[in-house]
Length: 117
Image (cartoon, rainbow, N blue to C red; front, top):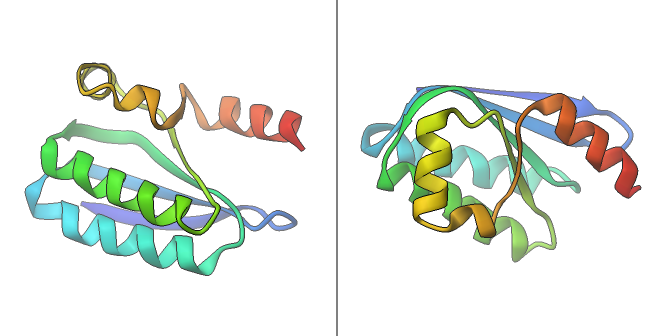
């Protein structure tokens, strides 16, 4: 799993965490740790880009839920973008699509976030 972080908006300090590879048992701890670090370091919500994640298992979901819980405890949020069909199905089956804010693309998320301000 490759994990990259980049700033999307200097004013709001909005950060994007880009994940590439499999979000599974082997990578979940690293993802959880990185999410906690990024959430702690930013005053804004965090966008997690899953466009290049081709597989998510229960350990991967757990890492994302842990990040969301950590964020909400700090009055922040995690926004997911770019879920593939397998990930969409997993989120629907587990009803996590009701808990996470999910957008089809980064552009769509940024448009909606701009409308909220």
